[in-house]
Length: 146
Length: 104
Image (spheres, rainbow over the protein chains, first blue to last red):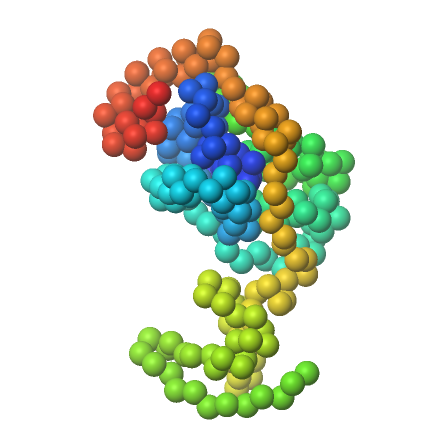
C-alpha cells in the first residue's frame, strides 16, 4: 500500500478552498478508493490549525478534524533524531520537520505546493524513494496513469 | 540546573502526576510530548520540545502564497471529467465518506 504525506499548504487548501476543481480534494477521494495511506505530522497539523484560526471560523477547524478522522490519517508525533541529523543540511531548517516526518513514515509521495523547498540538489543526491509533487501532478502522473 | 526531588505515587495504568514546580520548569502543558527511556535503574522522561535539535515555530501563511496554492490546485475540466468517469466506474459513490467529500 503506497503512502502519501501531506504538507501544511495542501492540508490548509483542503480545508480552506471551496473550489469544486480542487486537485487536493480529488487526491483524497481517489487515494482513499485506491487504498493509499494518508500521513501527516503533529507540527504540520499545528501549523494548519494556527493558520485556520486566523479566520475565526470554527467550521474550518471542524472540517480539519473531520478530514483527519474520515481519511484515517496517520500522524507522526515524534521525529527520529538520527534522521534529523542525517538530513539536517538537505532542506531549509523550517522545512526539515516535514521531510523527516515523510521519510520516517516511509512515504512514497510528499504532496506540497512548495516543491522547490524540497527538491534541492542535496535531496536528489540521496536518491530516496520519496517523490515530491503537487496534488495536480499526483492526479495526472499517479491516479490517472493506473 | 535546579535540583528538585519529590516523591509521587503511581496511579492505575502507570499514570503519574508530575508536580507543578517541575511542570513549570519544563513548560509541560496538556499535549506536551515526552520521550520515556530507561537507563540503568532510572526512568528518564524528557519533554520532546526540550530535546528537539530544532525549534519548530508555525508560521502564518501570506495571502499571496495562499492564492498561488489555490491556483496551482485547480484542475482543468478535462482532468476532472476523467476523474469523475473513474469514480463512476468504481461504483464507490455510495460509500459514506465518498458521498460526504465528493458532494460537489
